[in-house]
Amino acid sequence: MKPIYVVLAAIGALLLFLFLGYYNLYNNAVGLQEGLDEKFANVQSAYQRRADLIPNLMETVKGAAKNEKEILTRVTEARAGIVSGIDNAKSPEDMEVMGKKINTAINLAFEAYPQIRSTENFGALQAQLEGTENRINKARSDYNGAVKAFNSHIRGFFNSMFLNKEVFAKREAFKAAAGSELAPTVNFD
Figure 1 (spheres, rainbow, N blue to C red):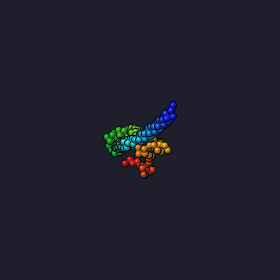
Figure 2 (figure 1 turned 45 degrees about the vertical axis):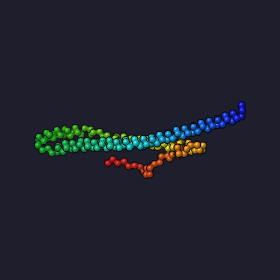
Figure 3 (figure 1 turned 90 degrees about the horizontal axis):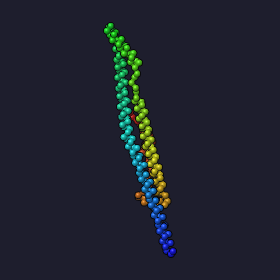
Figure 4 (figure 1 turned 135 degrees about the vertical axis):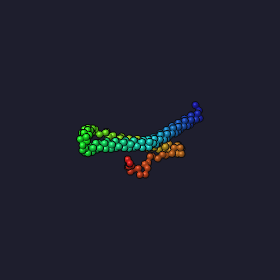
């Protein structure tokens, strides 16, 4: 075998090795970039879920609490009306009516009040708020992990020499908005 063929084969093998290395490097960068975009979309999706869910839950809980308040007010007023009617009896006919009212009042005294469920609704709202915030936090953490993996890949010694810095620009991790370190207030008015 002639030495020129050996040199050409070595150069061809080296070029093939470099091409396959660059191919692998580029495809890994593309995969990491797409994963990063997916993680950011998941953060946005979690925010949208919160924006859609929480106002509806708040209105549902408010409506249930208002309804229960009205029912309890009516029941209390009805019981108070029966008891006050007993005190105003003066004639024998009134005494007969009074006896019926006393029986009704005794029955009401042993009758159970309507079940109050608004406390349970507030508990369910709390659970949904906590679950939503946990989902958002998880999505942010996943995004930050993807940013770290992507940035580590593109900033590696050989990778940074061969990858286009415009196509594979360094990404910033998720940063909280100014003032977000303060706890939000929940208003049920």
